[in-house]
Each structure stands twice: as C-alpha cells, then as structure tokens.
Image (cartoon, rainbow, N blue to C red; front, side, top):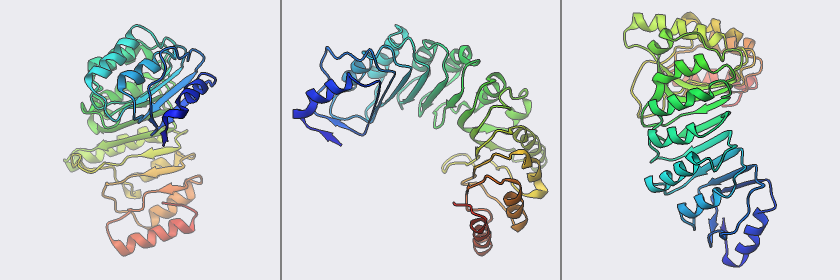
Length: 320
C-alpha cells in the first residue's frame, strides 16, 4: 500500500487521534512532522515501512512515550539504526513498554541486552533473527516472574542452551518458541516452572545419534511434555538446512501414550522429521486428542500408506 504526498498531512494528523497504530507493508511519501504528538498511543507497530528512513521511523516511535507495546521491523535495518533504538530504550523513552517485538537481523547481543534491560515487567519478548545470547539472557532474568511469551527463533547464536533455564524460571510463561534444544540440556535441567501455564511450545528436540541414549532422552522429554496439560499448540519441526539430529518418534511403541494428558491440544506440527506412524497412532490421536484440528501430513515414509493415514485423519475432522 502506498500513501501519496497529498494525503500525508491528514494521515499523520489522524495518527494523533488513535490509541493503537499498526502499519504493515506501507510506503509513506513523506516523513512525519517533527511536532507529531503520539503521547496518547498505547501500542505502536511499524512493520516493513518504506519511503521514510529508519531514523525517521525511530524518531516517530520515540514520540510514543506511553506505549506498552513496541513493534519494529525494517527491510533495511543496520547497526546505526539499532544503536539509535538501543539508545532510546536505555534512556527510558519507552518507560512503560511491556511487549517488545523486533525482527532485526543486525541486532547484536549487546544491543538487545540494553533494550531488554531497559524494560520493566516485560510480558512479551519476540526478538527473532537476532543475535540473542548470554548478555540478553542475563538481562532477561529480571523479567522471569512476569514473562508470558518468548520467541527467539532464527537467532544466529543458537540460544537453545538457555531454554531449560527459561522453562525452569518463568512460572507464568504461556508461549515459547526457539529453533532447537539439545535433549541432553533438557534431561540435565530442573523441572519446568511453567508446566501448568504453557499453551504453545515450538522447538525441535535434538536427540543423540547414539540409539541407546536417544531412547532415554525421548522417554524423559515425553515425561516433560506430558506435564503440559494446558498445551494447545505443539510444534517440534526441524527446519531445512539445520543439523540432522534425530527427532522425537511419535509411535505408541516409543511412548506416544504418555501424551494422552494433552487433552487441550489443537495443533500438532512436526515438519522435516522422519516419522513411522501407522493406523494405530492415528486412531489413538483421534481418540485421546478430541480438540485436535490440525496436524502435519507426513506421518510415515511410504507414500500410499501415508495417504491412507491422512484420509483417516480427515475423516476424523482434521485439516493439514
């Protein structure tokens, strides 16, 4: 969508009369006026804005001093603009932000730690495609008691080693998304403090290449998953191009029955993992997961057999 120059003055004036502003994939013909008053905004989201510079976007965001949700993604983020963002955050321009959503491929761990450290009582933190790492996790600690959502997918530093610590320390966590966590880290980690709250879990559990170790790891992870009785969304996919670790095996003989406690499960995704399910597993899921509506359709490696399993799932009301 492109806003022409002749409407920009009216557009910016209108932005001053709303309490929530979300612009996505919009091209603006001119930067906002320097006297824009956005002090009444509760939420401001700039998502893929073209036509004005990053500095203009950040200057505009900086005028929304009372927002509780800050969301910024730029097609052309760079270290300079992220430094500006971190400087604004450190000076507590956004003193009331509780929800932070950033998609910044050039954001360093140090910059993120400055931004996260400046927040008070964070509830939502989505910092995908960044260098989220040890400095950021240290600053995140101060938000463990209030954090409800954390998304650190596609991060360059592969922060999976921090996941057990987060799961064990955030009692109100409802959503967590990461790319990969080693099963050994899960087994060595303490109980999950969020077990009674977690609703959405997205991460690939990487098992050992040693078959005997993998058996024990799978059993331990299934036990952990079985405790998530509020879970509605389970995604254990391994995305293409990632390391080829063995994945969880969702067959009854491998412990699937332990997951009958997931009575609220609505979506179950396991893309790019090798599965060998049969009709027994399909019937089991249809019987025990009454609310399941979506599932990945590669349930086994035999084309005709898989088609039969998918047909049975669709007969049961599932989509894929």
